[in-house]
Amino acid sequence: MPPKKRRRFVRPLGKRRYRKMFVLATEGSKTESQYFAIFNDQNLVVHIKFLKEKGGSAPPQVLERMRNYLDSEDLENSDEAWLVVDKDQWTDYQLSQLHEWAQEADNYGFALSNPKFEFWLLLHFEDGRGVSNSRTCSQRLERHIPGYDKDINVRKISEDMIKKAIERAKKRDTPACRDWP
Image 1: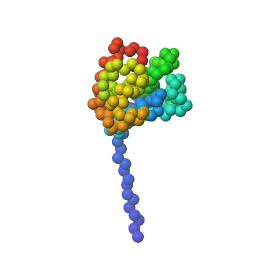
Image 2: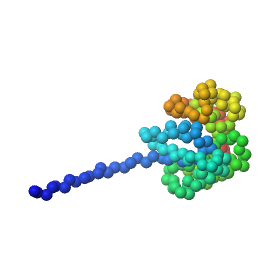
Image 3: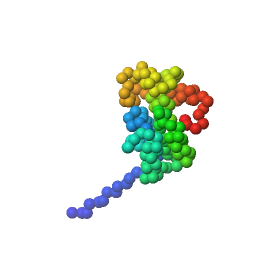
Image 4: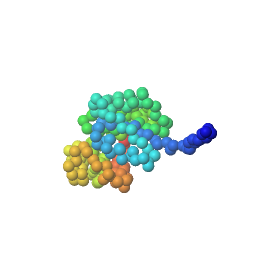
């Protein structure tokens, strides 16, 4: 029997498109991760890595989670690391620690929801005028998401709604906040 002819296997070479990564350490563990998961669509050029809450939600604990992650993982130059917390009852001193950390590198950031992350969700539906505290914010969000309890259906948030929320947030930030976005 003649020897079998060997087949050549050739793998096509190509470049995989790099997806910019955003690493998020947040105060909340449910709503924020559900919301930011919108941006993990495979067709987008960004990827969100959400650091799970371990051990608490106070600003120093959120910062510690991020520092631990960055000690074990390297960021690419174009990647970004963000701390996302609510104003809630946290002191200016606690929040200023997060702001100081964000100043350490060009690809570090700090985002503060005031009074809480749900206000950002509310801006997807309305301009948020008259919301001055957490309770009012929750009541107004209930009008748009009946039965809201830290659980959101992200399929009901469209790209257009996100753009409108960004516009509304920019209008509300007058004068523009220099320290905490």
